[in-house]
Length: 232
Length: 232
DNA sequence: GGCAGTGATCTGTGATCACATAGCACTGGG
DNA sequence: CCCAGTGCTATGTGATCACAGATCACTGCC
Image 1: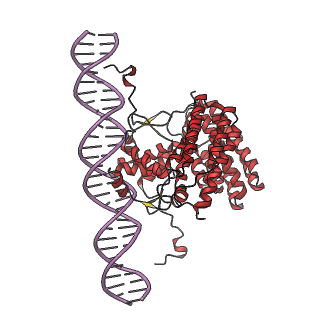
Image 2: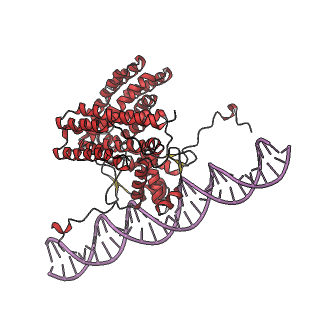
């Protein structure tokens, strides 16, 4: 059997082997898009039933998410989604602006031309999706892909992990604005700040990109604060 | 039995209940002080033997440390301490300066007078310890306590967790400089920058503190680069 | 002599069982 | 009517067993 050449063009890397990781990824995505309410309690056995596995993979996934701050184990050993307090929200916003700002600035100095083209495609898709009256989860995903395409280009893997972590912890806040009031009225100025970020990449000017990103985040934050009713 | 009053003055909170957490803490400290060599492989069963428990608590601790970037699970599912490459080292330094700089600046605006007094005590102890010819692990611990007393005063719990994580990932680098060349020749200028950090707290000037911290870190970094021989 | 094939051994993963404890509805005395 | 006491249920934690896959030394054919 010839293992070289085009015969293998249709082969994909195996779909994330270990069961624990699959549970982790699904639960993670579920949290990141605001699938559960802050303060809501989860139980291992309830999750095992949902995923159809045994306790073990769920235990691993939950513990890992707890280590990342996306879940919380109370002194009672009960598991819940962290409460969303205003102080925590403000801290997360401040950290996001700092961390993602650094990533944008770093990316501006080293992103490839091909990646910039891809950025423009993501943003086109994002804009098209936002024109639809009924903003869907798709717009969220496209927005996320746009942002992380930049962050990946920064070439700072540790920072990238931190930023993923921030988005993860931010997820439950989205529930407040998106879940309650139907799908969130997406930030109207996002395409504009995205355009400025792309422009900064072309001009290799990190500080312009950093400012555009800050505006992008603050735009979303304003919406959350307006619609979200976050407890003090 | 009267549970109020001074009868309970000698009671301490129970020593970190769950077995998994104890293993996690011990392994964590071991890694943070550079107890294992970068690239060294670990096995669960070897650790279970060392800790005297069953596989379960060790599995939990190892997975958590892997989630935090202090350990690494290879595609072979083997577990090892991450390799210490120069690019990663530089990234960690950059992030430490940014994150810990923010913490210092934030602490300067809100730290209490009592905490400042405690800072001076830590630094006195640190200086005294450094005068000893044979610099021990004690000086490392006092230095750590000094830094984290400031970071805790910043009142930013999420940031605090990130910084702990950075120190954890930094640990194996210390092995290079401390383990190989005997105990590291501690940064001679550390007391000076510590003094400047204390001064900035008193004057409520975050930017002075941030600069002092950066000098402190860069001083240590220079030592590591000089003695450590970190692979490219 | 080099190397594919093979078997034993070791390692991480997943399932199942056992257990201490938290949570809670119920009850009976005040 | 309130509340301490009590037993039941559910939950997270830890131990043990089973298993697939990786690693590696060995072997025997080319």
